[in-house]
Picture 1 (cartoon, helix red, strand yellow):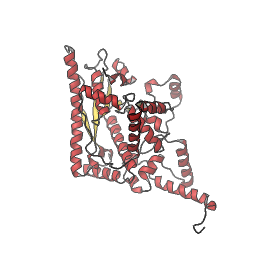
Picture 2 (cartoon, rainbow, N blue to C red):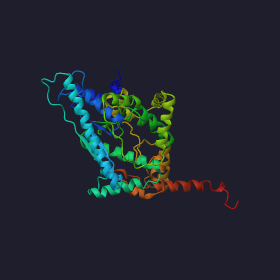
Picture 3 (spheres, rainbow, N blue to C red):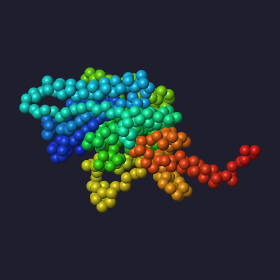
Picture 4 (spheres, helix red, strand yellow):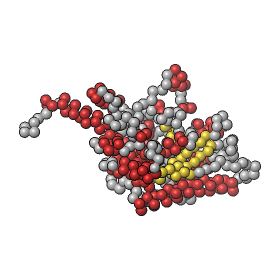
Length: 403
């Protein structure tokens, strides 16, 4: 029978906690109500130990909770109420999935002498809480909506929402002492992302976004895991169907037009319909590209890297202020050149965010949350000054308008 659980890759940190060598690992998963996140939640509930403090045979002892991001602040009044109810339903369904899985296991096995299982809770996270510097809830919603709707490019607007959502998940996980933040991103989603980021000029940073582990913010922050990256969307859809999971689809979307992300999704879907192995081919091809050091789980680093960390800290790449993507040497050289020309600190935005999200509108930078505004105020000025310098350099070779 179909069992996608064999493709749900565990973390070594989770396994170590299961042996009792460390404190119980705490997991948090992002739930959207879709196929991948619902399947991941069901699989984790199935392998979780039902006893506190130690692992049962064939199971892993860990605590877990679910996060559902509420994006109602981006909608108008009527759609906002619908979106709020949707987030509440997804959180309720996540709790039902875990409880139903535990009940099924208790019915199939004797539960005599077992302790109380670790508590599970689904949290609804308002997206506007990324503006931590503002205490007023209404003001937070206004600023978040103004920020997103101020982006003119449809692809940039969609990407900005994704960046804000990820920031909110990371902040919630860190505040609650979570060790691992799990994302329900499957091989199909990885293939779509690889094509979309290549089209958007983020090919350098793309390998870091498709690996199993991601600790780009440091070992003291929650590590992001993608346990379903070896499963395609069709497998997960069959799994959800056979175990009887209820799925939920977002009733409303901010971006209604055509985007590069949507075109990449349609392209991969067309390939998969004609050549069923297309997703695996694309994913396995991009997977061979060399990843970044932060894609290594800290406990699984090789001996040579560990010894170098003792004497000298590992070199952490410079990250984009908005999307946290590693900047390429070309982007860093351009920034350094701007620093020398302007004699001031330059921007840390990648090319994609600079063109598609920021553009030439300084109001986007002014509306950013304080945590994302760091060293990005000079972005538009640096871009315009670089363009002016380049034009002055080739001025002797340009024809006059009259000619």
